Length: 202
Image (tube, rainbow, N blue to C red; front, side):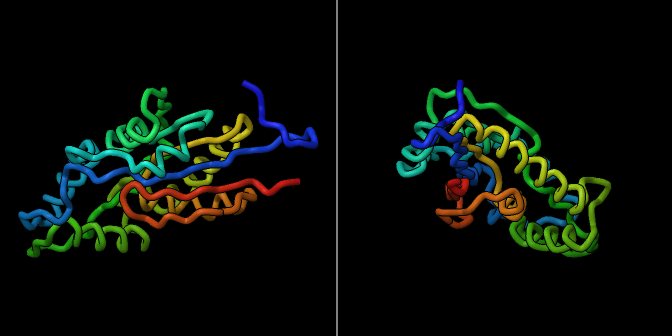
């Protein structure tokens, strides 16, 4: 496989399409309310969960990744299934560098919340240094830089598609900008949303 070339004969890169996964089967808005220890178990199950039944990639995502030279995803089932739906029949290369940033809940005894509330509390706690012996925010930022570097390297062959996760996709954005990529299509952060990054022409 050879690198793309511009009309003038110079090499070009990308573009890079980064999407969030589809709606998972495990509903963060569903009861019962959980204590912080229960939420630890819930998050572990969420990380292993698939997409909800009937989830299908939107036509616009399928169209934009149809000619991707390489399809990537995190190692989580919801991301892999998203890539498989968006790029049917294609080989998907999984890499844990694209996994979601962790959500360790703060130690708040005696209270119970829905998972979606714990998600918020855990993200705030994590951003303020609470890691619960897992990956810290500084370590995740290093990983985001590594993920951006991986996409940059892969882009030498042409268009790249990666199915990953809402928060980690946010963490990759500044790292892609540091390398020189420009976001030319911002689809937001909902399920199945995607952004397109393009390399400046010479």
